Each structure stands twice: as structure tokens, then as C-alpha cells.
Length: 494
Image 1 (cartoon, one colour):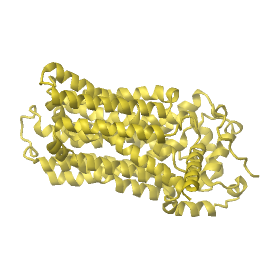
Image 2 (tube, rainbow, N blue to C red; image 1 turned 90 degrees about the vertical axis):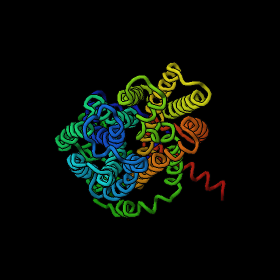
Image 3 (cartoon, rainbow, N blue to C red; image 1 turned 90 degrees about the horizontal axis):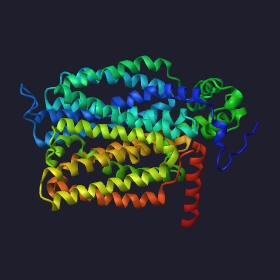
């Protein structure tokens, strides 16, 4: 039996399963949300440690109180240095072991890093533990992106996967609020052990991806898993989506899969690195690299390790630790709003609007700082603009960037594509956080905001011409869009 070709635009009503399906998908994704929440805690931990060094509430002995500016720069950026390694490793092992087993391994290392952090008392110790944390961050992020995009039905994919970024900010907020309350960074990190403990229980109920099961020739298991993920829907109701998955995962005859003929598919998975340079994969990768650069710049990632210092420079009248907590709360609020807006407005409109808002906020902060005399009123205006930029980036460009990583690649390069994209993100984060202090010294604190704002306008222009609308599209349709676009470019350049 040869499966029919998909229409250019699917009838998404065929994928409407009802409330039980939404609940089943949410339950399946709970582990990924907790993993990303723990990742947020890990990324924010160096910020809390750096802030604790200068916190005037810490009156007792602090073995890290005499660290230098260079050491703080390394502590703040090391957590971004090793995720690329974790991402690439994840992309190589995920095809073989599946997302579920990889997540189980990651949960063990999450628990281990919390225990090890309790003994941190020197900068050198923190360098090493940051490397381990960074590896795990990249490993987990790459896996959760692929898994989330594969288990969701098309019309819910944007909404449910946008919660990933909400989970990041929830982790940020969790550890910063704990520190604001306790003024003890070790106690704050120790309390977060509840996240991997809860995940250890939930992972036993987490299903494998139906697409991964298909790629291994486990057809009946894939069908049953898809039905469970769709709230116990009948096989008849799931057949259209299942056939789309067959097209997407292997491009083979359904009969070939049912007879166990997966030679072509296995060869495809083994050569995923080779397929990475093919136009249908290279084109979305190039687009994502550019989006990652501008998104990282405008979401304030370079400032994160030095947030308490940033708020000190603004002259905020509240304690910087609480200002940092409020900053993360605005990030969480923006992500919550994404869940309600992404399906209504689409990813393209939301990305363009939020990138423009962030650019304007940064330009205004830089202008006020350069041309207005310091005063409580201007201090509050700068803080509010900074919060607005965080709210906007977390409402649009940041969560959409993560969603796109799981959408734009064809199945044969999905895992390696998501891994490489994640690696690029963390490399950009590392470079920006490591060089931020040097940029601030050479250009000036407020001129960095001007520079970021102008760069954001350049990124806005790029997105306007290059970012397609992927909301309410199947993964097959999105892949075909980039394939057609690559073919058109080849014809024009040929």
C-alpha cells in the first residue's frame, strides 16, 4: 500500500482529539518541563553565586569573597561553554537509545551536580562543576526540544512547546527568589533538589516518541503510544496523523515498515551528519543561527551573570537581589502570555513585534543613561524598560526560537539539527557573557544598550524577510517549505 502525498496544507480538523488528548500530551511533557526548569536553575546558579560575593547581607565568612573580576567572568560564562558538547553527544546517542532513556541518565547527573555543589569553596572548583552542569544543560535541552516537537499534534505544538521557555524562566525565578529570601546560595540550590526527585518518579510513566519508535520499526508500539498521547483515541481517528508520521520519519511504504524493512531508515540515521549539509537542512540551520544571535542579544543573556551589578548601576531603590527576582518574574509572565497568543497571532507576527519592542527598550535605556542626569525617576524608567524588554523577549522571540529548533528540520536530521542548533545557542551565550565585561569597559555601560538595540533593528529586518509562519503546520509541511525554498535557490544560482 502506497501512502498518498500530503496536500500543501493539511486539514488540521483531522487532528482534533479533544480535551483528553491535550491532558495526555501535557502529562507526557511534564518531565521535559521539569528538566528545563532545572536547566534554568543551573544557568542562573552562577549569577546567584556572583551576586552572593558582593551581597551586603552576607556578613559571615565567605571563601569566595576575594575572587577577581576575571574569575567572576569565567564563573558566569563557563556554564555556557560546555553545553555544545552535551548537545552534540545527545544528537548522536538519542537516535539509538531514545529520548526516555537519555532523560533518565540526565536526571541522575542532575542529582549528582546538586550534591557536588554543596562542597564548592574555590573558583577552580566552580569552574569544574560549571563544566559538568553545562554539559548536562546541553544534553537535556537538545533531547527535550526533539521530544516535545515529536509528541505534540500540529495545532498544539506551538503552545505546548512554548512552555519550554516558561520552564526556563520558572527555574530562573525559583533559584533567585530562594536566594532573595535565604541570602544563602548553597541552601537555595539544595532546595531545588525537589525537581530531579519529582522527575525520577515521572520518568517511569513517560512514553517514548512515536516517531522514534517508527524509526526503529516498532510499528504497533508506535500506534499504541500515539493513541495514548491522543487521550485514548481510536485507531481510526489516529490513522491520518500516523500516516503523516510514516511519511515524515522514513518516506517509505507502510508495508515496508510493517515487514521490518528498515535498512533505508537505518542508513539515513547513520548518515545524519552527512545530511546536515544538504540544502533542505542547511537552509533552516542558517536561518536559526542568525535568529539565535539576535535573540540572545535582545533577551539580555549577556547581562544575566551580572544582573545585581546592572541594577546597582541603574540605581534601583530596592535591593538588587529582589530586583533580580522581579526581572525573572516578568520573564515568567511573558512566557505565560505566549501560551495564549502563539496560536492566535502566529510565530511570525509575535517574533517581529517582540523583537521591535526589545530593540526600542534597549535604545531608550542607552539614551537616558547617556543624556539624562541620574535621578530616582530616570532610575525607575530604566528599570521598567529593562523589565519590559525581558517581558517581550520571553513572550516572543525566545520561546519561538526553541519551538523552531524542533520544527524546521527534516526527520533524518531532526536530532542532529536540534543538537547543533542548541550547541550554537550556548556557544553564542558563552561568547557574549564572557566578552560582555570587556565591551562594557571599552564602549561604556549605556552604550552597550545602544549597540544591542541597533543590532536588534538589523535582526528585525532579517526576520521580516526570512522567517516563515510555521504555526498550524505539520512537521512534514514545514520540511517541504524549506526543501522547496532550497530547490528554488539552487535553480536561481545554477
